[in-house]
Image (cartoon, rainbow, N blue to C red; front, side):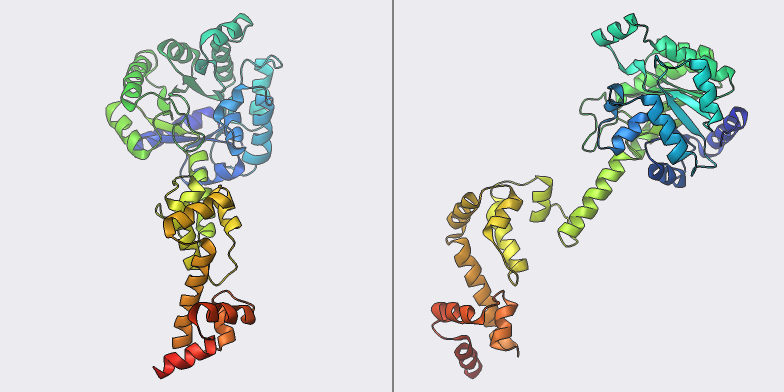
Length: 399
């Protein structure tokens, strides 16, 4: 459902007056959108970058020829977002430089399909160097994004402009953008997060300059920032206190990073039996955060927890991503006996304890410690202890 621009602006300014700031969430799926709205997001940005994040790709994927940006966003909006998001506006992430569209006609289509506004993303502002020059020679420019905002404003669509420098900020303000959002680069953190990003303080200085320009050109424009090095509530509190920022827009902050953590930790919990503390050896294996000194400890810990089941060194080696022969030799060197010898002795110690203290039959004791073949168990027991299990029980009880 399209939300009227005048009403949306009134609503957002009211939120700023009451709560001090507003929140936008760049989403790539209906699930993310529903959760973001439940969490209090004031508006949603339907971006192809969000869809690529859900696919396990970096947000940068939206800059490559993997798919048609505007078709991806339109399809996602119509089929995933607009049918379930009724009371929160959804903005269309528009690739204004798409050569296959007439901006004016496409903006009318965006509005008729129920989007409340647009945002210029993917934006040329994040492209620089020789590639930027080559694109501009072909007519692909930030000016085209400015034109899109002007036309959208004329059609009474709500407009949010991503900007990366002072000149872009001035252009978008003069075009009538309702929101100026300083794009600080892709979000740091998580597995797919940006590895290079500016510091919080450098970001603050840039924000101060650009928001001062907002004050001079259009004091009514809402001032927001997007991600980059700012990806925690603490980071944003710093920005609210030290800049004239009125809101935050998150992409990976609200979908990718929480999803990564939740899925990773939940899977780990099931894999490790409910424990994924950093010192848990299975957790170290799953996260890759361990070293060769942990191999023998991992084997001993596994035997301690699973001695009653079938245990094969080959399977442990597969889990540890090393060869069985290497694991076998390292274990023997560090423990002083072979894996098989250690396993037998551990199981026999458990069997002797049960023979002394439990009322289970000798056959049941054998099964309790991992021997389904009682004859084999009896032979091994007599070989190591010099007596049969039955004789051991009688001797221990008469002692």
